[in-house]
Length: 265
Image (tube, rainbow, N blue to C red; front, side, top):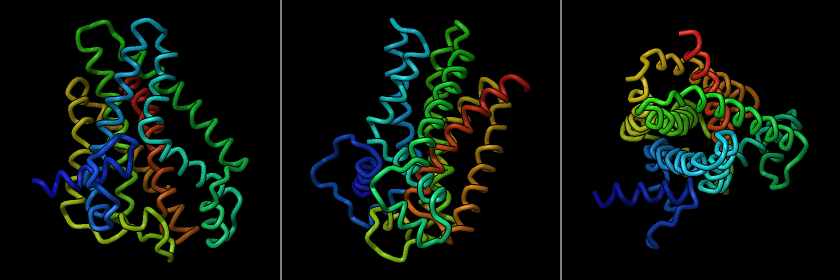
């Protein structure tokens, strides 16, 4: 139990800015095992984001509350995944060889592709999340619970989609300098089972209110498949930035899928 707590706090420290016990560090062995808790971190980030939304929605419009909820999630993670998304936009937008793409992604400066990508990403996330929240604000006693599950399931499932790439593909960089390198080591059934358990539970709970919601798994994992295939084609695998980009894209696809499923099914 003590070891599992250490692994969990390692995941919490690596993927968020939430303070952790002083004895927790970036031990490569624990970082590798921490992949099992990545979707669980989504529960925490999603809960914080929902809490911000709920508090601000009490005296502000739902759309403003959504913006503040997005800000809360960014502050919680330190823009960890958004930064990866921007790097991927720059790298794959400006590079035409594996070496060039990896070099651009390693550059801390943001380019035109990254800036444009982030603007479009946040616009999409804001509009889709706002529409999803309004859809769930039915006025019945369960509406708050539905919105809470919407936030948590979006963050958990998108993180599952992203982290599952390490179970099926190889790490692209040859050097060991990347901070994401330790999570790319061989994973056991504990990492796979833990990731899928924590990634799917919130969605299954949400599907209790409308079982057709489970259909969102199809577009989310199709997106994950094509992203991984794209990364494999150009850089022979993935990097930490690729995982961050996959999380962000799959989160947006999740909100879009929720709207489509709720409307047509």
